[in-house]
Length: 322
Image (tube, rainbow, N blue to C red; front, side, top):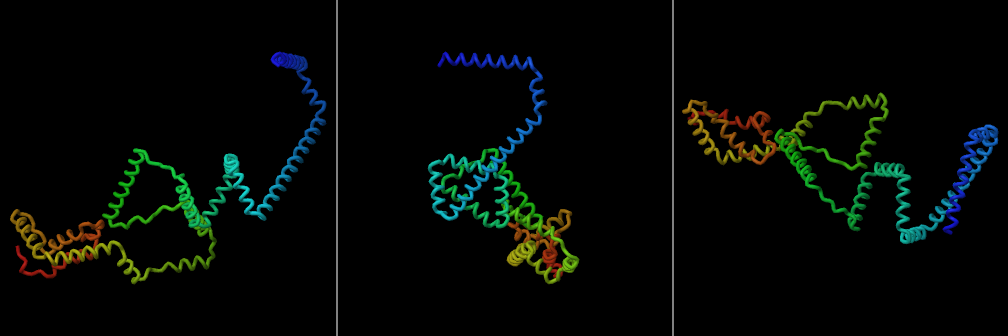
């Protein structure tokens, strides 16, 4: 065997050298042959392609026939089909997984499109299915134990601190809390589809006129009800209730303190305090402690607070002296 191998290699090399020498001696032979037999070559190529296409059609029909037969059998015997699949999975686990992966990569676009359509049709059902899948993964021990890096922790902490600062600034400015919330992708796609369908709808002249007629002034009763339910007014009512109770219990003490400070200021050449509104202002400051919306209870932002502070101005009398 070892002696025959060198002889075969030598023979192959000798034939290759002879072929190369012949090609070098006849450089135009193949071009002339193709030119002389062009029609015959084309005819043979067409016949070969027809035979190949026919074989492909027959093979495709044979496979489709087998698929239809398998589907019909599976529809008639669902339990046996499931048992056969389980046996195959147990006997060839790696082959089955590879087949599943191959099918996914071949049809990933169609699979993603079907999933998006299914989730958009029923977002709640899709969310519930996702939660069940997560629960099954955790029960099977497939939940990855992930922990953020120190840099990620610092980034998360900075975001949380910034969110808290923003909430405090909004509260001090008397603005309502942020009501935006995140939604999952299926629900977002469902909302986008509903919005597109709404705005793409063609409306007649009667519909447009009916919509325009709906733009009427808000009834005064409804405006008053909305104002009563507003957050700022609720805070103002709570603060004023506490301030009124505190002022009633400590009125004498507050007035005496304000009078003493006013006398000291007057002796020092400064203007005295307003002995009518200053005691109530101290009570208002005490009642505002612990509230984020303290600016809502300021005299410049609420007429109700201003009226409460100036209640004693109409009761001016000679008994209040410096």
